Length: 229
Image 1 (tube, rainbow, N blue to C red):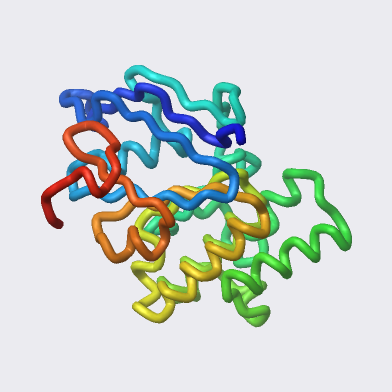
Image 2 (image 1 turned 90 degrees about the vertical axis):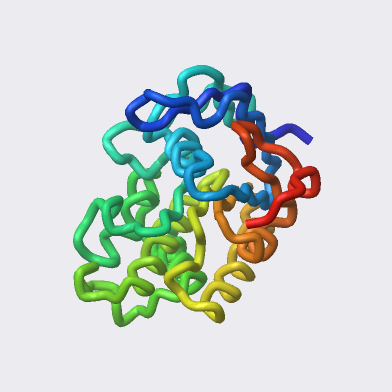
């Protein structure tokens, strides 16, 4: 089986580039596989997320998607092969209403008519977005509801890989467990890879079938790390 996403020898620094955070990141994700990267605050998880999402560039190394250098479309385009479920999605919304946000990617992919309606309805159902919200302003929703809209927008894009930053943290314990089950089903259904980044061991184990540890600038198997969070 060929990898869907590969990180090769990435070197990452703080946003101001004054200090190295990660010296040699190597990571491989296969279609349908769910990984979790566990790391303490300040370990470089946030920078790693932004690099994989195409929001910043590593000092060195490369990112391959299906064997080719990853190219993220500019201008906030949602047609990228990698979707991102941000912990706090508000700064990344590109529209003002629920429906506009969810249809943005599939419309950009050329979907129209029944195909578009089917994709949007499916994404809303899976993410738990009520049809009654469809034409509401995003500002009228609660934090948890906006997270569900963000998840629906990611799903509607049918990305090859999803990056999830502390998924479920605003949904409560029960909501997080439901989200974990949804992600498992979607990864299987779409043959989609997923990487969860978190500082909580229980969350890593809930969302990842394989847990890795970001420690001393490298990604290592969790069982090789002898500390605790």
